[in-house]
Structure formats: C-alpha cells, structure tokens
Length: 236
Image 1 (cartoon, rainbow, N blue to C red):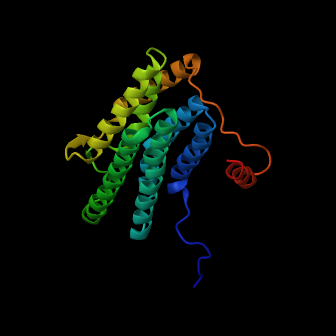
Image 2 (tube, rainbow, N blue to C red; image 1 turned 180 degrees about the horizontal axis):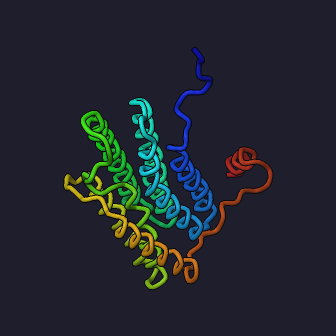
Image 3 (cartoon, helix red, strand yellow; image 1 turned 45 degrees about the vertical axis):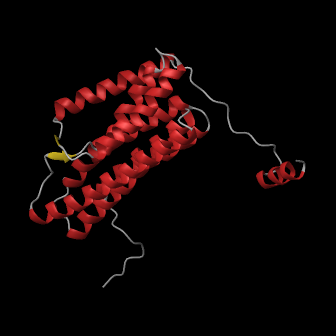
C-alpha cells in the first residue's frame, strides 16, 4: 500500500479554487500598495473563478466521500479569504475606519464566517442524502461581494468621496446582514450569470478608464523596519 507524502487531495477539481485564492492574495498586495483599480479587478476575477469551480468539481464522477468533503471545506476556506477578509481589507484601506468602521468590518467578517459555516453543515447533510448541485441558497451567497464592491467602486467615478465612503459603510452592513438572514434564493441560471458577468465587466471597464482613487504607498526608511521603529521610539 502506497502512503501519500502530502495531505489533501490533488486533482483538477480544486485547481480553479486555488487560482481564485491566488488572484485574491495578489489583489491584497495591490490594495496595500494603493492600487485599488487592480485590487478590484482581482476581486472580480476571483469571483469569476468561484462561479465555475463548483461545476468543474461536479464534473468528476465517482468522487469519494472524503474528496467531496475536502472540496467543500477548501471552497469555504478560500471563500472566506477571497470574499470575506479581502473585501473587508479593501474597504478599510479605502476609508472605512474609526470605531464604526471597525464595528462594520468585524460585523461583515463574522457574518461571512456564519454564512460559510452554516452552508457547510447544510451541504454536508444534503450530499449524504442526494447527489448533484443544490438549487437554492440559504441567505445571500458570500461571492456576492465580488459583484457589489466593483459596482460600489464604480460609483466613485460619479459622486464625491464622502458619498463613496458612505456607500462602502452601507454595503458592508447590508451585505453582511443578508449573509445571515434566513431566506431562500434560487441559484441563477446561465443567462442570469452571463448578465451578472457583463454588468461587473462594464463596471470594471468604467473604473479602469475613469477612476483616479489612490492612496500613497506605505514607505519606511531604507534601514529595516525594526531599526526605523527603534529609532523613532528613541527620538521621541
């Protein structure tokens, strides 16, 4: 009996999920660097990957129970990074700060965790009873932020920065609340998905062409961060 040298399952069913995660991680570096247009593009691309990763996973027939559960857990963990922490970080860098900002960012992330945890419980139970894809969502899917945030960022082209920041605050609260409200939402068919992709694509194009939103890079003197911090504290 051959013993595996690596934990986990490695096949094509999780590749697109990993690609989406990698795109989001790259997007985080862009957001920290103040390149918000690139960060929003990465978020939209990550959402596009998430749109198809489930279809690809289900295309493999005769998956073992462990493979199905592993794929579900990987998908949820990556979703938490891509559509939970990542959008929250973008919003904080854009200006959702202070006590209210912290509260809303924490609220959004907690709701994201609850949404994904509840999904895992329901999906594990469902997969033991039936095959195929679920036809309904319970609450708003977490991937929705990959649609909402590009649209909100596009608004910045047409309104003042104050209105834009208020829209970010409102988005975090409303979307987070919809994550945990118990309502059934029918999964979109291919036509609706196509329309959503086109809408986000238009928003991204407008953002790329017209948005000038930018914050300065975080810079430290070229002597090493801890040396710089030590000297700053000593000279106070």
